[in-house]
Amino acid sequence: MSTGIFVVVLAVVFTAVLATGQGLYWAWVAKKEREQEELLRRLGSGGGYEDEQQIALFRDQESDSVAVSLGNMGSGLQHMLRIADVNYNVSTLITRMLILGGVGAVLGGLLGMRNSLVLGMFGMLLSIPFGALPLLILQQQGNSRMRKLVEQLPDSLELMARALSAGLGLSDAFRLVAEEMPMPIAAEFGRVQEEVRFGRDYREAFEKLLERNPGIFDLRIFVSSVMLQRDTGGNLIEILENIADTIRARFLFDAKVSAMTAEAKFSALILGSLPLGVLLLLIVSNPGYLEPLWQTWQGNALLGFCFLMYAFGILLMRDLSKVEV
Image (cartoon, rainbow, N blue to C red; front, side):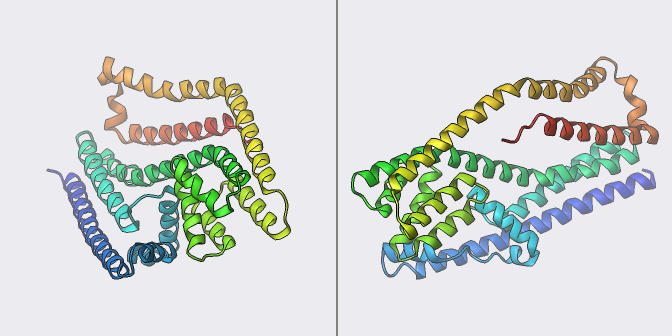
């Protein structure tokens, strides 16, 4: 075994051991934090079910030692977890990232060394996309939850308007949405109703609602309208119905725009998949034709340049086919 290959193998093993060790450590930290949360829950349950619910509502998210040690990065990860509304913390997220990153480094290094030393070194960079996979999944979960929340908002506002027309109060209207509507709008409006029931002011409860669901313009309009009506008066039923109608009209306009840009998006998909399809066809039909790309440093450099240009083209086509309304 040459010295270069030995160095690559040693680097791969070191990366795998380091990632596994860090992953096990943070898994242990997460386990201890869950035990502390369970202890706090039991200590707070002596006053009955309502007291326990009140403690859960007014207690901020449990302090995560890993998130605190990461500073702004930890706060950003906590923000992503809050948007996605998942049942794990920053420690668990980083554990998954490290484990998958170590797996990617090992796979990329070992597979790359079968052809050349340089390719083996570049193969270890596979740990970056592997390690980022939990973040991408978390972001997708958050985006999906936000879309569902916006889609359910018009029906929820109309349900609240009907409840107010029947003589119910605003708190009861929130409770009705929590009971009748699906997730996630039911959970969010249910939290508002419970917080108000336990003594929190509407303004503060709405601020918490917007913190948990940032970037939703329609939800912010709803909160501002309700608070303005409570301060100055007005017909809240009519306000809610108008907001629901406006949101539905915008949904219809977005659907029309999406239909008009479907051809451009499909063309971008075809153009983006064409280079990969040609590469796969060449590998299957004539493997020796591409050997210089894998076995020479000039070929490796050309592959890296082509990958960067390909990624730039994909991002450019995505921006060109996306229409902001």
